[in-house]
Image (cartoon, rainbow, N blue to C red; front, top):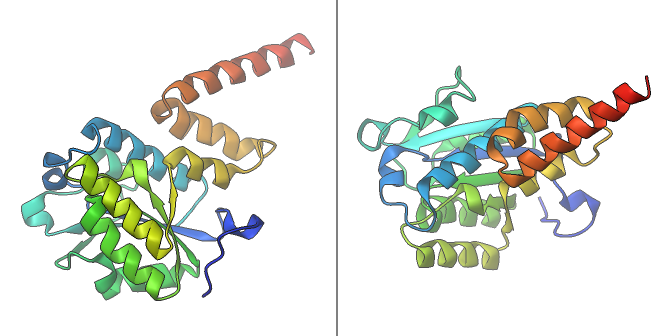
Length: 218
């Protein structure tokens, strides 16, 4: 698979990508210092909810959860029936179960977020890129042990060919057209209103105004 960095096909769509969320567990959060931990929780849960709205296949994975803790509840609650793949490999891409799960989706674009950025995100991203996958990294749903560690991890992955994004940028590319009213409403209520900060507040106001105009014209 050849990487595609420009043009319409370079954008994410509900049909062309798969999401892999790696090691959002208590141990990793305990030494997260590149971001405020609650912000990463907010962002990764918002990302997961956006993926669910658009039926994007989502793979959850943990490392040594018997020692590092179960996946955080807010994230597990988005996919309550899914058991995360619990690994011993630090590098997720060395666990064949994860790679097979990605391959089974038939998607060529892999969106990843992880704790920590410089290790548990960088390692699988660099390997997957070398194997020909198109990899998108969600930087604000990931984090490192320091700001420098996160920054160096992102730089290294970008240098290798990864495409950095934020979680709301992912959501926007999946939506693409506000005329898709069913997904727009679900995205607004399920993800943006709860996790989008000022954007969520502004969108709720806009929807209120649109509803008022519709009522006035009836």
